[in-house]
Each structure stands twice: as C-alpha cells, then as structure tokens.
Length: 178
Image (cartoon, rainbow, N blue to C red; front, top):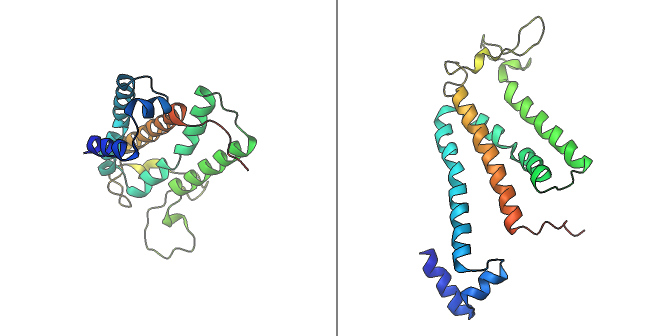
C-alpha cells in the first residue's frame, strides 16, 4: 500500500523517483532499498518491548524507557562526536535521579501513607534499600521479574542507538536556531 501511495504522490507532484532520491542523499534506488531494509531490521528492537511487557510492570517499564535520552546523548557524543554542554550533563543527572526516585521509592516508604501493608523496602534502622522485594513473587508487583527489567533496558539502549543512527543518516546535525 505504501508503494502505491508513494507512486501516486510522485505522479501528483510531477517528480521523478531518481530526483527525489538524489535530493534525499541516495545515489540509486538500490541504495535507498538497502538503507530502508537496514532501518526495518533496526526496528526489530521493538521485539524486546513486546517480550518485556508481560515480565515487568508498566510503571517500571515506563520509568526505565524514560532514560532513552541519556543513552541518546551518550551515543551522540561517542559516535557522532557531538559536544555535550554542561546543561545537558546536568539534565542527565536529574533524569537519572528521577528514575531512581520513582524506581526505588514505594507507597510503603511514605510516612503519610495509612496503608496496613507490612512490607517495607527499607530497613528500619539504616534506611538502606532492600531489593529483595523486586523478585517475581513480590506481593506489591506480581508481574515484575529481573528478566523483564533486563529486556526493558535492552529495548531502551537499542531504541536510543536507532535514534542516533537515524539522526546520523537523516538529521541535519546543525544546532537549532534561536
């Protein structure tokens, strides 16, 4: 269907396929096909999304995937040689702090919470976090497992790498105008 739509668009706008491809940086139809195929294969990271959802809670999955921006900045600096401004670094610190707060603080940690739950994720004497409640048999979150967390992190890293490669191939890499 998309091929038909593209051909109709070319006919209506009276453009040739070669001219459109060259305008977008492709030397030939074959080159455009291989780039499109590579990006389609690159989208396979979404398999980790589908596999991780039954193994991890939606709130934890969402929290983990919110760190995509951290990996995008790291990969952009490492592979595209983009400069990291101190404000971007500070935003990463705030992002990771927010993820840590959301991930490790539960409703039972709130002193104003009136629930009768006896499970607390901190030890009373030292206030250190107790990660034993993160097992798949936890009463607070029955569908969270370490495998689900690993798949969520793999999804996040692969998504960030896909975004960086997309920007490298199709992005302008010029700073936004003020």
